[in-house]
Length: 172
Image (tube, rainbow, N blue to C red; front, side):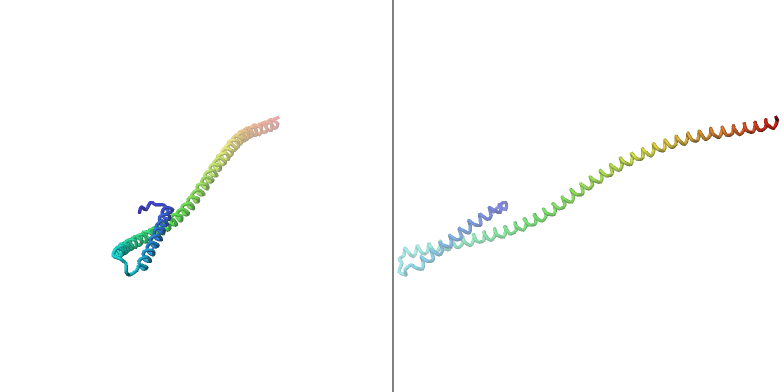
């Protein structure tokens, strides 16, 4: 028997074998009934026929036993196939769970990458804004320093002129 038969093919084969077994059992019963009802005064011809029937019955019994062994072997093989199928189903469920977890992880990674990219963009924009504000503040500070220096010069000039005027008033 090839192990590549499908479950349905195996079941169909088992059914056919059981039908054949039933037929053989019926033939056996018929033959046994025929031999038991035969009169003890049968002729030699009938004795030969009975011997042939007995041989045929023995042959049929042998075939019946062989077929029962085949059916038993097929039932064992079907049981093994069922066990293998159950193991496959369990493994399939496990792989499905792992696949779903992987898809979830990929989705979370994508969300994380998007968030990081968004934060980088926002951070870069804020850095540019702060950098521009610092440049503007630096320019204002430089301008204020320049004005301060100018004011200091004017103050010194004014103080000098006040001293000069005070000296001129004293001289006058």
